[in-house]
Length: 269
Ligand SMILES: *[C@@H]1O[C@H](CO)[C@@H](O)[C@H](O)[C@H]1NC(C)=O
Ligand SMILES: *[C@@H]1O[C@H](CO)[C@@H](O)[C@H](O)[C@H]1NC(C)=O
Ligand SMILES: *[C@@H]1O[C@H](CO)[C@@H](O)[C@H](O)[C@H]1NC(C)=O
Ligand SMILES: *[C@@H]1O[C@H](CO)[C@@H](O)[C@H](O)[C@H]1NC(C)=O
Ligand SMILES: *[C@@H]1O[C@H](CO)[C@@H](O)[C@H](O)[C@H]1NC(C)=O
Ligand SMILES: *[C@@H]1O[C@H](CO)[C@@H](O)[C@H](O)[C@H]1NC(C)=O
Ligand SMILES: *[C@@H]1O[C@H](CO)[C@@H](O)[C@H](O)[C@H]1NC(C)=O
Ligand SMILES: *[C@@H]1O[C@H](CO)[C@@H](O)[C@H](O)[C@H]1NC(C)=O
Image (cartoon, rainbow, N blue to C red; front, side, top):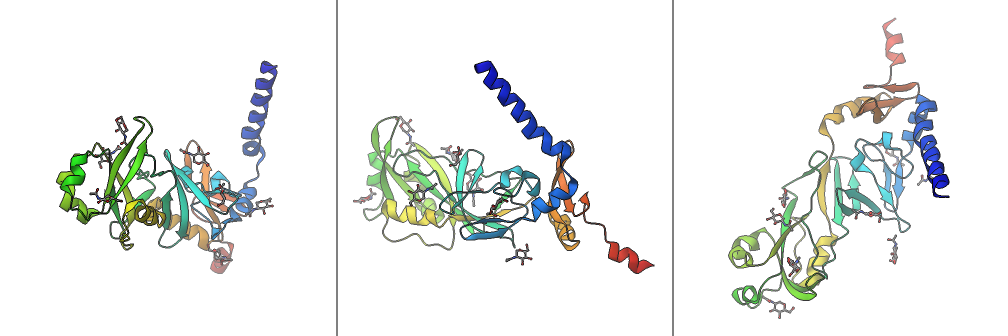
């Protein structure tokens, strides 16, 4: 039974992975990549993103895969972290993300890490908020009495409640010495122009993080190619040779840069 099942899986995955490549007509790429990604408020999204009805070869990077859930929320998985995609501005190539997995009530956290070959922070728009966990009593005592950027979280491994603090860059410079007594430190990007609410506590932190943060996406080197491809009536994407390379998917097949311009040739004669 097991052998039969695994044989079946082997055969079907053989057909799934091999067939589209071997019999797929080049023109199919053009049609496939003409569809846009649409989910909730995110509509008409095209290259370099893929996912939903857009195949992998319609995207500019494996990392730019979008997933739509039943609620019309878009997610993107980057490395080992999941983000909600709040918006995408196709010019100037900005995506607004929010960490999905930051469960503040349990003290599990890690630095936000984006792949730096595809995503770039714009330091004018984004700054790091620093979260401090596992803070001893003396940290509370050394901070001003009205300091409200604190909350309690439950540490699953020690089964204890812990004191945690969060500070923006200005507060960090002011209180860094005291806060360095905390055991764990984590950086989370936030929008510079969204003020931290006055309320303090976990609520103000949550609200700030829900606004997300902006990152620039692109393999910048693709950009001129994609403009030329678009202008020639093609759909930007990729083609697999021994690695994925930029490709302009045209009605007559894939081209390296742009679709052949019949009109221009006839102008010459
Ligand atoms: C979708 O985006 C393309 C450019 O990428 C634009 O030409 C087209 O008008 C847009 N369609 C809608 C319905 O917004
Ligand atoms: C995806 O493709 C399927 C089948 O072609 C179609 O029924 C569906 O409406 C498409 N979804 C979107 C969001 O375009
Ligand atoms: C959709 O929204 C409902 C209600 O807000 C929530 O309970 C559910 O988990 C959501 N589903 C997904 C896939 O996020
Ligand atoms: C990200 O979310 C998706 C869908 O909820 C899930 O399948 C995947 O395992 C998650 N990835 C990580 C790294 O948490
Ligand atoms: C997060 O990054 C900072 C350096 O930017 C480092 O000091 C800290 O230990 C990291 N935290 C975790 C939990 O990896
Ligand atoms: C935030 O800190 C991380 C290190 O943990 C760093 O890689 C990143 O560039 C910083 N982001 C900003 C916007 O300064
Ligand atoms: C949770 O508790 C363990 C054991 O005391 C400690 O090593 C770890 O740093 C704590 N984690 C956080 C995020 O505070
Ligand atoms: C932390 O929060 C509590 C109540 O939320 C408050 O009483 C306390 O003064 C705050 N500040 C510090 C430094 O612990």
